[in-house]
Structures are given as C-alpha cells and as structure tokens.
Length: 299
Image (cartoon, rainbow, N blue to C red; front, top):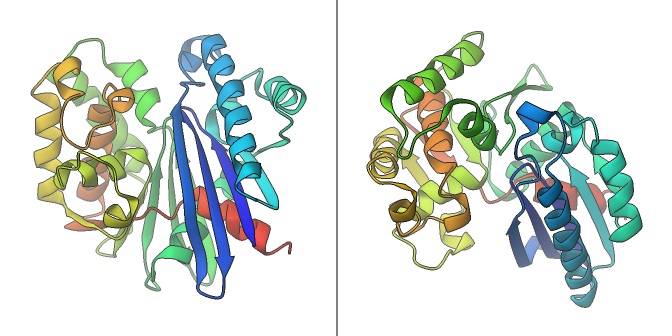
C-alpha cells in the first residue's frame, strides 16, 4: 500500500510518498519546493501573494505526482503560517478549489504530536528525550513526561527570525545578539537538562549535509546523523563568514534556503546550549512521516 502526505510550511511545500509494508514506512519519493508562503507575515498578518501562487502550483504538482505513483490516500496539512495568518482559512478553501486538496490546518499540539511520531517511527527514541522541530515560522519542543507528551511552540522559526532581526548580509554581530536574546527569553522557562536531543527540519538536515559536504542531498545518509555542538558552531561560522551569493555555493546548502540558514543554525546552537546537550541526532522522520502514520491508523 502506498500513502502520501504534503506539508505546507512557512518556507516550503514538501511531499512524501511512502510504501507501507511489514518492515514499516519506506519512503519512495520526496519533493521539496520553496514557496515562502509566510514571507512578510509578521508585518502584514497575511500570507504572501507570490507565496500563495507558488504554493497552489506546488500542491497541484505534488498531488498529481502522488497519484501517479499510486498513492491510495493523501493527507495535506498546513502549519504555523496558515494557522497564524488572517487569510489562512480562506487560502485553505482556495487550495481545495484550485488544487483539489483538503488542507488540515494543524493546531500546535497536533503539529507537535505528529512531528514526535514521525521521529519515533524512524528512530529508536529513548524514554527520556527532547525533540525539536525547527521550521520557518516556529520551533516545536516535544518531550514525554509521566506518560504524557508535552510540547511548546516557540516563535523561533528561521524565516520569522530572519525577517524580524536581520537587515544586513552577512548579519551584523548586533543582529545575531538580538536573536540570541530572543531565543534565551523563550527558552528560559524550560528546565530539562542532560537528556538526548533529536532535531527535525530543514535547518538541521542542511547542517548535516554541510558537515558531510554533500553535493547531492542523500536523506539516508542524513537520517540518524549525530552532530556535536562543536560541529554546529563551526558550520554556523561558515555561514556567517560570507554573503548570500557565496553561502549559496557551500556544499550541502540549498540555494533557496541560504538566506535563512544563519538564523536557523544560531537557534540550533542556542537550543543545544540551553539544554546542555553536547550533541543531537538528526531525523528525516518528521511531520510528514507523522502524517503517514495518521493515515495508517485509519486503514
């Protein structure tokens, strides 16, 4: 049986088509299209017009591809940008009308649960663990406690922080300090310490790809990769040392993500520092995998 999921994020539209068998969830096709749906959301309160046009086109292409690959069921989900924008619900109706895709706009708790399930289904998570899902608009922290799954959704998304604090290329020291202070304020109430950490999202997979100097992205090599805090710091310094046009040429960096990677990588560094984690494990299993799991439960 083949199932498919589409994640409509602040920065991109992503597709996962997977074969479901006795061995588990086996990805057969991944697609990522940068759309910047949430560009300017902080200032306008609305979704970007070019972003909406790009998202409609990307969702149409992804749904057609999923069907051509034999996907029997498809779930489409919108996250922080569609959830927070004043026109998020109306855009969901536009997608249903133009792309033929019903969109679940996820509440923060469901987004966090699906992200955790995605990681748990693809990695052997320990009993005590902190999972962070760093997206374009927000960063979800998820951890089990006393038999329950706890979560927090923080405004630490890579697109959000870039638009809010960065005005220069490369970013100035004072702009980076503003991101550090903002991150510290939002993380200050969390007292988890000394437990394993798992990272999800385009920033963390990009950091892994950079560390491995990938000229062609390989999800299988990235998944389960352990990055130390020192590795993250070193890659952050590489990103900050050059302007955007040079940053886009670094092995492992997707050109469409190069402008938001400094802010995202800095957040990863701050998370590791706050939770006193010497390293973290990169997971390709994420909200898309969690959406696939939700479809399996309905079969």
